[in-house]
Image (cartoon, rainbow, N blue to C red; front, side):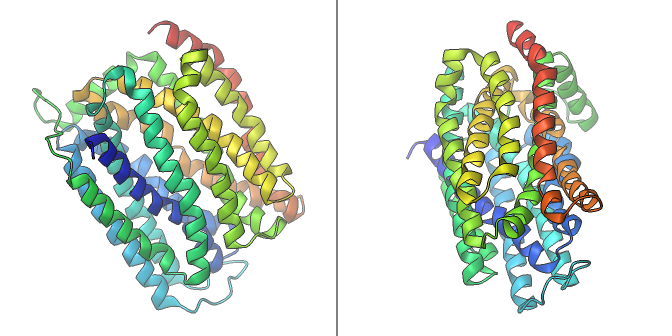
Length: 414
């Protein structure tokens, strides 16, 4: 097995665990409380480290062997998932979820803590992995390599993982987290089989302020990267707005079971896999600027379609369209970034970029809960649960109009 294949396979295994957790985090939180804000706090804990730890992750990624950093972070995530599984097992059987507050405060706290640890390790792991990928392929093959990587990740994270997570929840709640520890162990074995050193060549002294200043100076001098970072940040915020809304919408408005909900999310992964595999060809046919412009614009109607979906099939179709546009955008965006940033700076510039592009995720989750809570004061709960979709759809359309020309200008200067 080639180094790239091992790298992709290891990423697939960790994303299988993440895909199981996509369903498990919010679903188990919804079994402890029906308060939308309290349900949202669990995935907020998962995403908050992207805001808090992105900059340290960049400095560390450019100082150490990136393969070793990935191995250590996968081990930490495996331990956190094992701890969450144990906490759920100890707390069973669960009392009915109250409309306000939580039925099992200790378990709720343990889930929030485990989510924060998993999210923190993910920040370091993903930054190192994204900085390491260009070591395996020539520059002109980055779109294809990223497409292969994301198709594997989506197959496990969004297609197999959610469906498997839903089945595990139905069988026994702790299994939804316990299986993840084994998946991370297998990923570590695959990655450990890759030979070589993956520490970037550095001649500058180690001073974290100076190191971050170098990364910031590079990002400031690259207007295209700044536009892509802010655009991705706002889009991620809108995407996270639907995360909690879709759980409660699926449960209360559409009456879906955990299995049906997981299959709906998995159906959306088909679109994402298609987007990741076709992103390279679409970018070559339309050019990178037009590809990103149209994919961004297409996401707005996809969010709105989720609010109008009358059942799981149409909801899955809306997810598929959204994932297709999002993954084509990612193939072009990440490949452009990897090509533009020198290896010695890749971790720091990636961390600054992702601070802008991923640091907005907790904001989107909180906004989702706030929109539903405020909407219930004026509208029926059934209608209020669809408001995050409408807000995300409108926001995405406004965003695409605002950055249409800056994206075109940025690529013209490359």
